[in-house]
Structure formats: structure tokens, C-alpha cells
Image (cartoon, rainbow, N blue to C red; front, side):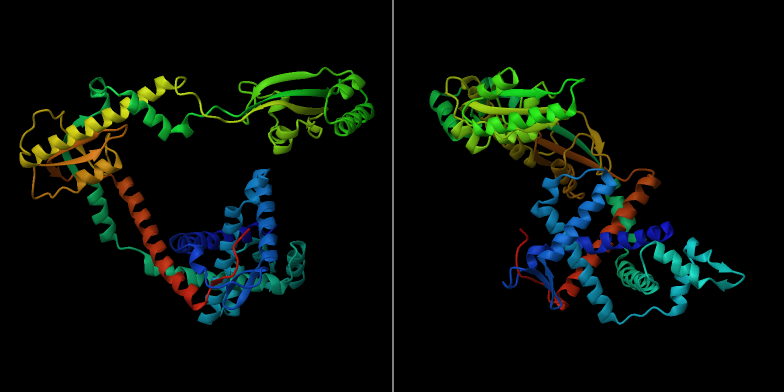
Length: 482
């Protein structure tokens, strides 16, 4: 019911997302730091505090909404500082908008409100022979948990917000001429040829010394570490298909209690319940690879096994239910912490890495030398590959760095050469010989670019506008989100 109202609200939500969010992306919540106050207060907007309790309530509401939309929500995400900070940003944005609406002293007339409400089919249907059914109107709102005042004040606020935000949008819309000029720049084509100086071409020319290898090993010791692992013993209580649920619950209680009361061994509880003590060696924090359904791969169990207490004291961990009708208790028998691998063990990889780095240096040196020569003689084409036309719309195999270099060439000074680092190492020299505009433009691509340019213009204008609102509202950070 009242689905139309929710659809109307999406426009306002989109405007808020488009206009207010970039303001915070550009300036950051950190810029609101001013002073320190009560730990219960987080931020003050126009003298009014946003408290930790208010944030906690908003975080819970946001999590509940995500739960309804997605079916499940990662609790670690909800409890993280970035998630809470994003919710706090939204609260601040709402406060800033309310502050601005109050300062603008805008008003919505009864006629304007009536016209707005008539856009909602459920309300329009309440007119009968030119008469509005007030009782059915009240009942409709009551069925949705609202009073008339709550509903109409909310619609007034939405209309006021839309007025203010669309005014900001109007000042930020770019001209068609600007969009056309930018599209032309992206369409401009340049004829290029390339010479690649790749490390692979110089690998045969390098010969690392023992001193080079040892120095690299020591400098990169953290990259040559063994993976932390443990050896584990465990007992698994699994209900049989025909087993009575009450009997299984009693066995699970015995397992949990005995494992806790006799924590130095699994043998007593295994004997009592006639369970096999199983063992697995070399389990990492990632679990047992290639066996996703293994009971020891349960995330909660792995966290308990790799806890400091389990590793240090070798006690039975707390019994854990890892599925319907499955309870497990485990203990760490041996622990192998992460440690540096011997130099001899990783020698082949060290040789490979040092050789690649030395080959990279040779390739860059050769490329720079060639570039210095070609800058003086750009007409020379010897050694260059076949020519091709590239543009920002059609970069071919050029990286963004290479494209920036090619596009930086002065059109009045052709031919010219530029250099850019290559993907995978080394350097590539590009010879730019000609520039042209394509015979025709892609209408669809131009339309998309014009839309993006308009959005960027609106975001830039909004960022500036809401930064001024922030200053006038005297936003101050009191305490950090925890």
C-alpha cells in the first residue's frame, strides 16, 4: 500500500546521492575536526549534537534495511568503522539539508501540497463525485503507521528538499557546447608507432652475483616466509538419521561439558561417547585447501583453533555446532609459526626476481638512450613498429599513462616522440606523426559522454554549494567513530 509514495521518494534520494555525497567525497569528514567534547557526542551541526546513541540506532536501522533487501548482512561489515562512518555522513547530510531549508525560509502552499498528493494514485482514488473522503484518507495513512500531520509534513519536507536541490542542479548543468568540445577531444585520433624496450629482451645479458642475491633476500625477507600452521586433534559428534533429537542433545551436552572440564585431552570424552579421535596436520588459517566441506573449515572453528590461548596452552577449545546435528571439539597438538624460509630453499625464485630487476634496469637505460637520440631526430622511423590510429575513445593497447603522453604532444610540432613506462616493466617510445578528427562521431557515445559531463558539473557545483552550507552550519567533529 502507498507504493506510489515510495516511488516518488526515490527521486529525492537520487538527488541527495548525486549532490550531497560528492560534497563529502571531496572534503572528507575529517575536515570537520574542530575541538573535543563529551564522549557521547560525535558531531555538532548548527549547535545540535549527533550522539553515539543516535548513530547506533541509525546503524541498526540501516542494517535491518539491508537485511530485508539482501537476505543477510555481514555483521563484521555492519560493526566496522567505515560502515558506521558512512551512516554518520548520511545523518550529517540530512542535518545540513534541514539547516539550509530553514535558512532559506521556503514554504509549500496548501494548493502545491494538494497537487503533489494528487500524483499518488491511492490518494487520487479517495475522491468520489468531486468530494474527498477524509475518513478513508486517515484510515489509509493509519494502516501505514502515519497520522495526517506526519504524512503531510513529510511530503512538505520532500517538496522543499526537491526545490532546493533542483536549484543547485540547475546551476551546475554544463552547456552543450562544452560537452561537444570535450567529446571532440576524446575523438581526436593520432597516428603512432612504437618501440618497446622489454626486460625479457635483456634477461640473457644479466648475471646476478651471490652478493646481489643475498642482499635481495635480506631486503625482501618478509616475502619468503613459511605459512603458519597447526596440527589438530578433534572429535566429531554427528547425529544419525534415525537418532532421537533429545538423545543427541544429551550427548552434545556431555561432549561440551567433558571437553571443558578435562581440557588437556580428548580421550576421556572420546571413550565416553565412543568417538574416534581424528587428526589433521598442517592446517593454515585458510583451512584445509580442496576440502570446503571438511568440518575443520568452519570459520568460527578456525578462529578458535588459531586463538592465542589454544596455540599456547593446547587446551580443548569450546564445543561448537558446525551444522545441523554436528558438534565438534578440537585441540592444537603442534604449532608452527610463520618463519623465514632458508636462503637455499628460495634461491631459484631469488635469482629470477633479481634477474628481472636487473633486466628492467637495462631495458629502461636502453630506452632512455634511444629516446634522447630520437628527440633530436624525430623523422627517423627505423626500429618502430607499424603505425596505428588511437584516440581516448579507442586507445587500442595503450595504457592510460601512454595515452596521456601521446595526447600531450604539441600538434604544431610533428613528428614527435614521447616515452611511457610499459605494463610488465620496461619502457615504450611512441612516435606521433599525424593528427585527425574522424569523419563521423558515434551519437550514442557522445550522448553518454554529455550525460557524464553534466553529472560532473552538477557534482562540482554541489560540492561547492554544500561546503558553504557546512561552514554556515558550523559543523564540528567532537569525537571519532569507534
